[in-house]
Image (spheres, rainbow, N blue to C red):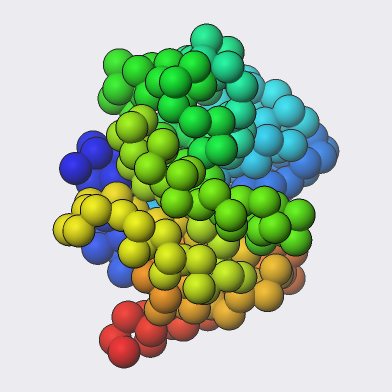
Length: 242
């Protein structure tokens, strides 16, 4: 099992949480507010996914400060750069993000392995990090295209030895489909965004086979974010109990 995934599962078990917080603030003036929010909710999180707009807006030095702080508390920082370029460029992007402290990166799966995911996969292995592949998206345009080739996306992505896949919670049938496409007794994990603000109920992705739910706006736009996190935990735990 991937070392980063192992730490994710261990923390999840210790705190009884399946929440990965999507930290998508994109205004540099929100930097101090964002740090305070992370300090408030981090005891209930398995990891934090930093969106591309956040990384660009805050800058790598500020993001690195937050990332290193999270790692000191055993949380997993994930860079959602949605990497999608040729091999050597993908590798450079990953190296920069790993140097800033990230434990994992997210890349598109439609690129194929040779000439794109191959270099990225090599860098991830060398750095002992994790690669999560975007297998499907929730928007109409992507679903029209990606749905037709999801089997190829999974098969090509498997050559890169990913830690898992990203599948939208707003499309529970796709979570099940991707899960079915994985090898029997696979230790790959599924992360599902789209919970809360995008419409999928708390805990629903877990109920359909995802290992973790990526949740952002429902938390950081709430007037009482800590109460919202606890509400999410209750929903997830109720689904897990069956």
